[in-house]
Image (cartoon, rainbow, N blue to C red):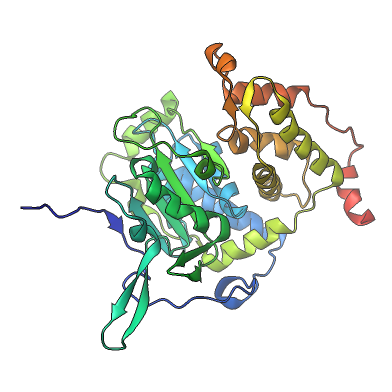
Amino acid sequence: MESKRQVTVEPSPLQGEAYTALPRDGAGLNGHKPQVMDAERFHDASERILGSINKVIDGKAEAAKLALTVLLAQGHLLLEDVPGVGKTLLAKTLARTVDCTVSRIQFTPDLLPSDVTGVSIYNQSSRQFEFRPGAVFANIVIGDEINRASAKTQSALLECMEEHQVTVDGHSYQLGLPFMVVATQNPIEMEGTYPLPEAQRDRFMARISMGYPDKDAEIEMLETHQASSPLVKVTPVVTASDVAAMVSTVQQVYVSTAIKEYTVAIGRATRDSARLRLGASPRSLLQLLRAAKATAALDGRDFVLPDDVVDVAESVLAHRIILDRKAASSGDTPQSILRGILASLPVAQEPPGAWRRDRHAV
């Protein structure tokens, strides 16, 4: 007797309903262009999100800020570390702080691409095919253990991550805004896994390695997380419209010509490095600049400094570059090579305020 295929998918609120393709008119949430937030409202909203995450994830304030940075920069996040350090917990907490649609996909070897994107089903009453959306139709999609699914299923995420749309049977369906994929994977256990191809890794704006908590944070965790899961107390602190407005605000952050030249210099240095077999792609530089803009906004500025680029460079670029055999055998890591490149590249010396004054000269 054949056993039925077991697939674990937490459905999005749209699953089970006929879905109509949305027009690609560049409009924001619900067809309306989001309004730009003022500095005070932006600061208050970001503090509420970070405060909610830090109550659940002890001692990982930097990881929480980077996760929010990726969300506001319209990117996707890869959480890669050993089991039990809070990867899925961080993804769920971030999702619950925003009052929007959330879906979770448990990636398994028998998961099919249609489970992710959706499928067209024939309706006998109307005698027409109707599209039934998959789990990817949500504002925040949590992909747990993404490297346990086959390469065919992993590739189902390529279009939606890059173009924010899904194409099924020749019809394109646009995803809502905001849209973010938060995927987790365990780099230690290799049995029964399918490593992410480079094209897939390049679509993740940043990678976070959670790491073990320090002693005080671990003691705090043991004291507060025993009775129940801390997720139970997490409630939305901002709406999807608020996030869309915050994204629109980040897009307005000014980037001077010197910052653009510095970003390009970092990318070209990775491609020219003799210790790297694959350097940073043009897409990665664009995402590096977007992440730097979000970092500047979270720090209360409407212009980017070189330090903003440096702060996110390792998280944005390290998972995209590949060492050559000699560098790998000598103990180098992508992170160490990136630190060397950043330390050796000259940064244009500007007088105080010049990064902002350039804005008014344009």
